[in-house]
Amino acid sequence: MSIPKKYNLVGLDIGSHSVKLVEIEHGKRGKILKNFGIIGIPHESIFEGNIKEVQVVASAIKKLFKGLKIKNKKVATAISGYSVIVKKISLARKGEGDLEKSIYDEAEQFIPFDIKEVNLDFDILDIKESSPDDEEADKEDARMDVILVAAKKSIVNDYMALLDQAGVTPFVLDVDAFALENALEMTQANPSVEGCTAIVNVGADELIINVVNKGVSIFTRDSNYGGSQINQAMMEKMDVTYEEAERLKLGGLPLGDQEEAVKEVFSSVVSSWVQEIRRALDFVASTYPDLSIDRVLVSGGSCRVPGFMDLLAGETAMDVSEFNPFKGLIVDERQFDLKYLKYMGPQAAVAVGLALRSVGDK
Image 1 (cartoon, one colour):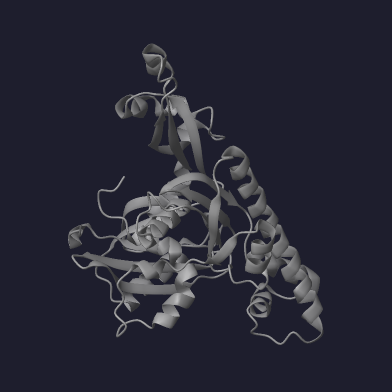
Image 2 (cartoon, helix red, strand yellow; image 1 turned 30 degrees about the vertical axis):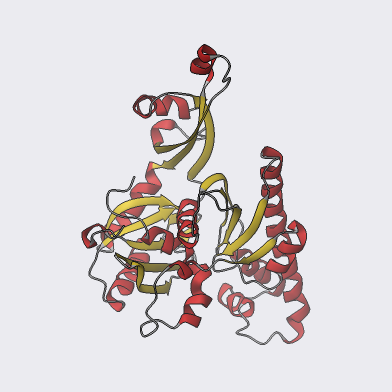
């Protein structure tokens, strides 16, 4: 079903290294890629989810909209990091209206922040019946799985202020992990019967894991791992600036006698990423012993770090491949270079997931 233009939102992924923008037209023929753009922002403009340089980031957003000639200023964006908690909990069965009234009381035991300092949202995932042989016990003991999301009000307010300064209007504030899930769902023919997929997004300062089974997220985790670790390690080991480390990382500077040192940094950092991912997947396996993860899709600007995908495949004994969210969209080859889109796909995954949202979404 197509979504009227007035309800379309521009997906805006505000990362710590760059801002990505995706615009999708939801037409009768399907979902059509209308715009895609990316712009870099200076190092530490955003650090651990906190916006340090509001004017700089707002200016970058303005440049993206102006450069791509986008008139629609209604956006969906996302937050992540330590100020955002996503947790799956099990509660006694109750109606959605009753849960909405009591959600703060229910959530308080699961949130490591002052409950008055957070915005809460939830979604009921599943209702579990206890004993089909005992109707009364069934009514009393039935439970439900609920996905709980809490975000610090201070961070939410900072993002709202940033977007206001950039001249755009936020209609949906999502979480990175769910935006990735949304993008994955679009690429699947029938998400409800598809197998179990682990999405691993490696950004500059954050590693996000979302395990999705038959269209439902069963596990999410954010960790402070990412491409900036490589820069920091090079700065310490080789006495170079952040910018020089970035060029070394991307192959923009000759390695010379530093080749072995660079290889050691890559190997050490990548190993830490893989161990973090493996711990998460082992936890999923122990929590859901009857479930088998069919594949791992990697995304994010740092997913192509040399050795990462091969080591991850070896350590997990799973099929590991890049996530290309554009493959679920109708693309006009006269407007977009398909090879470029495929190359940029992993970086665009969150932005694509956000662009699939619409005005009025929860």
